[in-house]
Image 1 (spheres, rainbow, N blue to C red):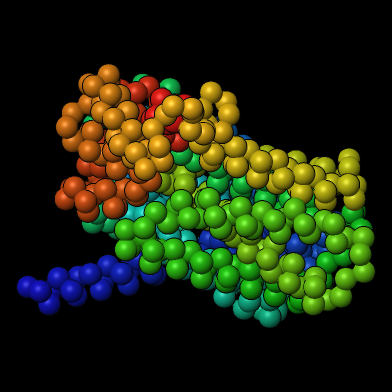
Image 2 (cartoon, rainbow, N blue to C red; image 1 turned 30 degrees about the horizontal axis):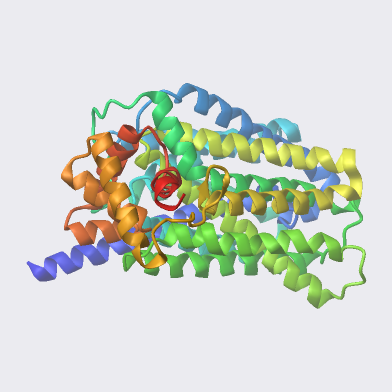
Length: 483
């Protein structure tokens, strides 16, 4: 029996890896479709290929906005029929993508059709990601970026007449992964309980509280992507051809390594999301902030390559972080995957279009807009992450407990709020561990319960306290304990 169990786990890991590679094929297709170093863009020239890119972003935006509005009031769905739904949505997406990519349509129309098709496939894959554990989400994202990097490296050497057929094959291969290797829900994944009584507004507020940091960062990176797409309009010094394609491939590979490393950290009970959102991403922001100020300085190819690899790694990290945060947020907040995917895709499409248009309006100045937006983003993150009391940084008031007794004071405050909110004994234990910064896997291990149970208790605490995030809870605890 033990041998059978080990064989089952090995088969599950193998299927997970193959499914992740199939998702990576979809990412590779999107890179071929919209990246300035895609073989089609290099062959046709940026001005000739730009209408197709405009269309892809418009298709993502149109589908995303419609999906977000349609699913705004729906709850997360985890029934066995979801796999059938994913296959149907993915199949329709494949047909639309192939029509936009292979049929002799006007470039903008073909781009819109392909963008809508890719959006349907992305929605189907997000629905699958929402059924993974946190460690699986990280490793799947890492493997997908590694596969996308490898495929794009190969496509750069494929004869141009075969590129269209190869790209079409990537779309079909991605859908085949949903069909053959994407199971319904993994063991240990979190399934929201039914009938909690939360309103649609409460669920959406909870989703926004958990996903906005990486989502905003990802949207800014897509905006920067649009700014720098047609560098001929902005007189920006970038490497060209194979060198620029190498930067893209190396950047995705670097992001892949980091995601896989964080998955190992998550498997050991660490809060990989917190490390990614609060440490890694702010460091990557510095690349986008510093890079524009080198534009007017004579820079050799090596410096351009270093900045290029870091820039592409930043794109991969921010986009992957947003993908993980949304797939986690829809399940934890009990909102529909259609809504989460809609917000993500509508934002990506709108920001891509805005970035492309800004180059016509702002010219070379547009390259500095990314640095300005990321600087503001860093400031906002720093303010939000700092413990605040009445709008000012928390500090020990005169006559309050000395630092050695701070833990006891916070514990007393937790007890008082527990009484005020009428928390159950288990909810009190979860809240105490949550306010000390422990991750859900750690709390589950400490209390000998499942992550599903921990998340249920956390949602109950938030509902009774009428808040939507850990940060709000900590602010309430610290308000009397430190002020």
